[in-house]
Length: 237
Image (cartoon, rainbow, N blue to C red):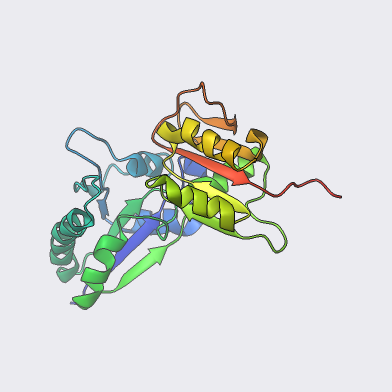
């Protein structure tokens, strides 16, 4: 009996209709779905997205915990635990799907386990998805890059010097997980003489409470919030 395969599938930002045809097909064909979550009390947002496109009633759904922490080592530990569980299923010839928000290649928990499983000799296939900032930019009707412009993606503010450096070096800046830091971002933009109308906020794209619009320092934003700063004017000379 041959070993099963592990599929890492990006399910997009929130709208089930943004799942790719390939993602839907593979999820339908596989019996086992791994849907990571942050704690015992949390639900998997990625799984909810999948439920809008695929009937999961006959699936074996497993919900491993990947606790959010600044300690990278903890992610590797959670990844190894989940990987060992998955490997037992792959040994039995079963294909396994691991679903993750957005695109698999962008800050995904999946890659904390892919290397480990591949080193054990098992096949791993990555299926890309639509990132939240790509979907948000499309809905806002703004480009991420044009012509010879460049682009940088920041996972969060973290050390604010990172944003100062990005603003000084790049034409377009994407700042993920920025809900709590919108006033800070506005302040740094002001210090660098960038008008606030050069920023677009995309929050909860494809989910309840979706907001796509100008940067408003008085508004409250949730965890799934990204700010896109386009320093270069789109207007023709």
